Amino acid sequence: MRTRDEQKEKLIRQKAIEIIVKEGLDGLGMNKVAKAAGVSPATLYIYFKDKEDFISTLCLEVSKKMVADSLVGFDANMNFETGLQVQWDNRLKYFMNNALEMEFMEIMRYTSYYEKVTQMLTETFGTVLGAFTKNAIAKGELLDLPFEVYWSIAFAPLYQLIKFHNQGKSYVNGTFSLEEDTIKQTLSLVLKALRP
Picture 1 (spheres, rainbow, N blue to C red):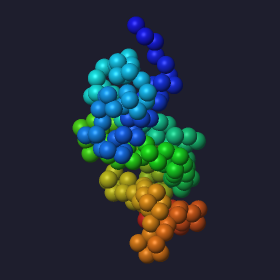
Picture 2: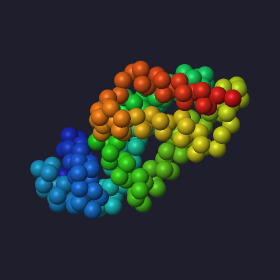
Picture 3: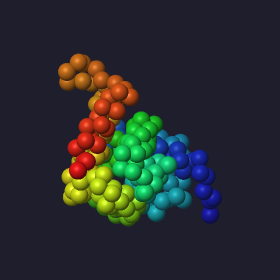
């Protein structure tokens, strides 16, 4: 049996993400990935059972990295403003450094493969961020809101700014580039909206 080569496996994953972002999930074929990575199609089956396993594994791994990067320097006992600032900084850094993976996950979000990701996110983020928001509510730093409302106010503005940045377009001025002042202004408004 052939041994696993981590660099080759990383290249295979990267090429698959590139193909999915460029051509959609329907454009992904094992032979196409193998050709893009410069390996034999049989090589893919050293790392993955089949195409379903390949896509599912890819989704989970990209999501796990995003979660890990989002939690760097974060503690559930932080005051709410500091904790949300850390979350924004970490997520911004991750998405700016991993734009392709961000696009990949946006595509995968609307597929059945995302179910395992949702379960992992619920378990991981639910444990850490759940404790964080409960602590903030108990300390009177955060309104007690349904999760979907909280998340929409806390993170959707950041994600939309990142999308505008990645598109490089402004519907008003023609071009848009995300600047630190814009982040600070938006986060300030988010914090104001979430405070009791």
